[in-house]
Image (cartoon, rainbow, N blue to C red; front, side, top):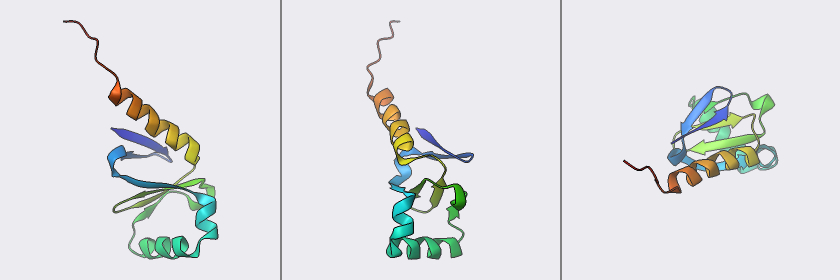
Length: 90
């Protein structure tokens, strides 16, 4: 399944490693250093100035204008849909 994470970015839900609140990034020097290194490798996308959250995958980081709560709800909806029983009668 795919999740729209804002800013015209869509990623596979199974690729998500972490969803991090942007405020933690600005207050955590380790996180800041990691993202700066990934920026040098062109592995960071999205508008940092408008970011509310950060999506981390195994090979890319996305700044998202959507909140962690919104992204969590979207990923939860996908989990719910995939767990539904199929009552289709042939």
